[in-house]
Image 1 (cartoon, rainbow, N blue to C red):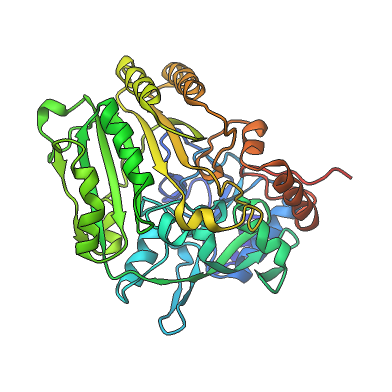
Image 2: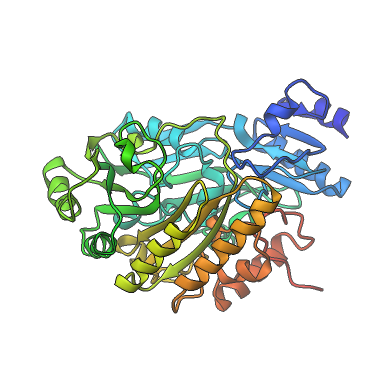
Length: 451
């Protein structure tokens, strides 16, 4: 099989024993140490199609890697054929037309930096090294979510290799039901090789990091201010143990603090007015808010930093004083090296899209919450998993949903939580049509209907 792949694929084919095998199979998730049967790095859609055919004939599991950030470890799997898209990075920007075609080996940072040279942007997440493939197919909640919606709200077309090896285009006019499913349904329906995005004029943002003391009043006040902010402002509130950051006074290191990330997509004067309520909550520990190019919102990353973490995701209706106290008390009681509750106030443009317009159906969700904790070894993982699960249960409110991009390896029930019943039924129908044998199953899986 490997010799056949090497004969037909112009890109790299990497097998166990090759010099760079260990380097190429590494992913950002430190808990993943998988040894695939072969890693193929195609250079175009035709080669992706060929490898899909080989995988289908071989019966080996087929994994797909864009940036490799799968929380469930789906990017690289033991004994699998991995289609690693990182050598497919072409980007064609139509400045006048307001669109961009992007191959799915690009990272969010690479795409955003290229567009920023033209004063343009498409919203992704909050981490530059994330591949645009996975984050887009799952929805895309980031720094422009309130102004321009989810990433999929700017997705105009997808070039896709399906389970039968066909290379097709899905958009509003061609394969529209597949296009609906690709906008939030994850990697269940094929391998996306290119995306066509709508782009927006974003000359600069006003934002960055604001670190505040962690008190119930600060947490409740921050959420209220974010909820009442103009759509141009999107925020991420992290209540967390403070790492030893050089720009934070040492007396706060290891203590629970509020680390907020804010982004106002507009001019400096309006941005300062929108940020004033957050600065006024209390005396900041560190205030790094300023005008900047959009890509500067992505913090520098160390490729060797590969933490092991347990994450639990949910949607909340409100964060009042009682919820804030629960967050602080639970974080303070843990001795984990790193623990965090992340709160993202949603709404704005995201909420104005009908719930059934895309496979991401949580348009009315008010706040997205993540509970995360780092662990060391297997014994520590069990302890931290129980803590995160209990913590999430204590925060749970009326919305039983979940965001598929932030799910770990949590089982079929949690995948169902990402999709309300009508959405799930439509996804199953699309899956049954395009992947009846469930070739694309290394994902948050929507199984096809049984014959």
